[in-house]
Length: 256
Length: 256
Image (cartoon, rainbow over all chains, first blue to last red):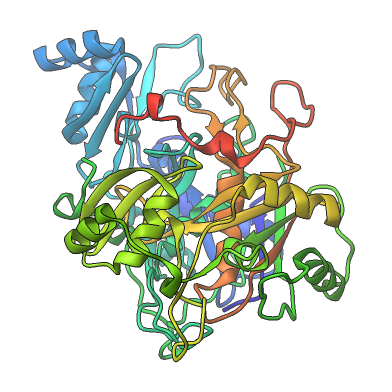
């Protein structure tokens, strides 16, 4: 277990647009930060800039809503074209009521609006756009990791069932274990530990969110330094595992 | 928005027992860390040591289970005396099945086993004990803050409805806003932000969990430095708010 961590927002990251070489932009930001990344470092990148670089922006004028989307838009008070995009990105509607549409995204995330964002997406006086999640956030993280040479998390902010306020979570991860399984480790008293599978990448994602702001600040990438991911039982490094492992399958779920 | 954070586990914190002066123990740990706390610093303290210092340990031999506890113990496969304690700490059972008992704690937390812990609680060869949550975690945080002179979060690890692995959350908070409300701030493009109430104390709690381990490591207190809690609209410091604000009331809840 590490006894200290540091987090630093990469300075000077410009607004990212479709087709930008995000890895090169992040490499420049890392270089501006000074000290080269080493063992225990993880780069956390906001979903929004990953989606933008991957061209996941859609002009609402190009979307023709289905009858189902129109009905659901009526029920929720949302734009039918936005609801159409939400339905295309989802495998099921979990809850719908006025002002709220919670779905299961096709990657398994249970989240509002399938993670589709309309803030920080386009100028307010231009035609309305929406920004979808990356097609495969684990693949996005893996591609950035391959270019940058350090573990990468793609994070987003999710609402929670029973708690107010959003919290950073890992949509994608590469080069680190998304879950740390400490089951079977003896605790301080020699008893076997009870609840001990930790959402490691989610905790890192939440920590990085503290430096990202929620839009106005423009700090979409944070380097976290000093992490350790050994299993307590073996002291060996736990193997990498994508963020898909953090998604509870519907069969295990009591609240869907 | 800050652009860097640091986290450090307080060194040399001994095993805490009922009646210990936890504030004095933490003050010693802060002193060992060197640099005195300043603005933007928050001390995160694990629920377990707060509960122990407050004498929230119960010997199971002293617990007589009710008929309801016996029935629920049968259904979940848990010790009837433990189930009795869980029911006493709760206002409703949310889900119960073999190996699992999710309740609404009387403080509103929807969580497994009412947060009652049996690991790191007593030596494995002694009589079994259970450790309850602090009676009022916000009051615990406020009392520590008054003694130590810096904002305090009492954290714990919660499971999540739709995600695997536990994640640190704030049970109690004093001296900082548990929620940061950024609604109405202009985003980078001048649009009004959509989802922008941030579970600030939960994100800090999750970050600190990265240094706490899950039992075997004995790092129950972490100093987080460099935080800022201004509202984007006013640039003024957001007012303190207890962690009770993070609890979604049952009336707002779609998943209870």
